[in-house]
Amino acid sequence: MIICRHDLSLLLSGDDKIVAGYECRKNSVPYQVSLYTGYNFCGGILLSSEWVLSAAHCCKSSRLEVRLGEHNIKEPEDTEQHIMSARFIRHTDYNSGTQDSDITLIKLSQPATLNSYVNPVALPTKCGTARTMCQVSGWGSLRANNEGCDQGKSSRMDS
Image (cartoon, rainbow, N blue to C red; front, top):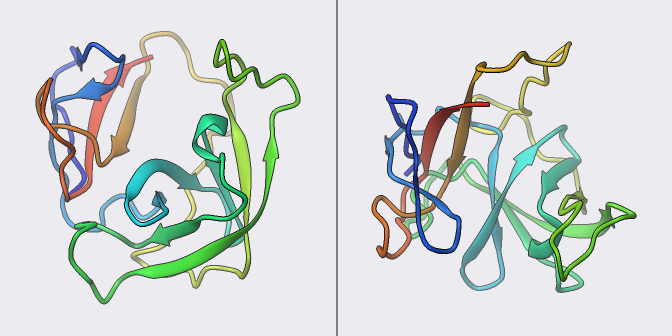
């Protein structure tokens, strides 16, 4: 499920992960992807039919499965596409020790089929101003010290 928050305050767990929020309407975040190697371990954002943006620390193995169109990551759904990664392009200044420049592009081994369940994120045309509302999504925890949830979630926060 994808979780959303209504207020501006977000809870941070001890490991700096964003928690809390609520389940979003099924497939309402069609750009959210799950990175999978036998289990969901990270998320990403679909930029185009062939490219995903994620954190560099998530891409340690040479290949991983990118799951698109997911809502409940533990149940098969007819909206899903599972596509293997073809290659990674890490930020040239990425430092695994400090997590500086922790960003990477993932090239899909084949283009995703774009539809109402799988669709790239709408990128801004200009830089946002301070205090602009933004949304955070993924399959994190509903509460601190809680295991991850099976359905996608998102939170809204000030930038």
